Length: 84
Image (tube, rainbow, N blue to C red; front, side):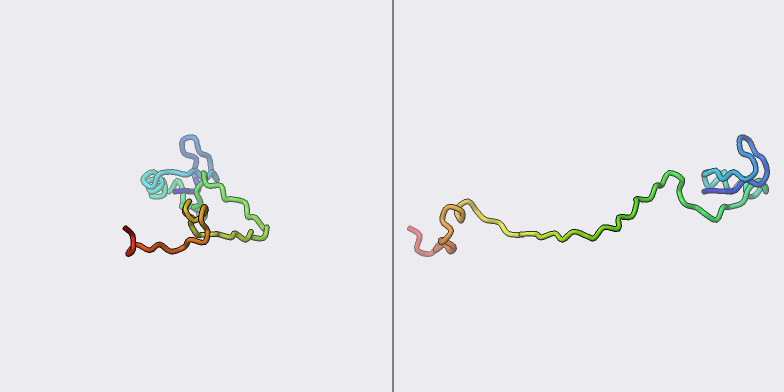
């Protein structure tokens, strides 16, 4: 949780905005040393740059050709009943 330091405390001076655990932040706010900062965005988060380029069209050919169909392209159906 990010708080804004109002009074010097430890290594922090007035105006610092450390990212603390909720327990320590609650303790410092209760003692009047700090207040909860409006911006709670994580400090280790770096947003990805926005890409203004047009999206690329992707064509998906979603079919499977067996090796038998490659060798004999006209043979499409199998007759299982008359097999001896």
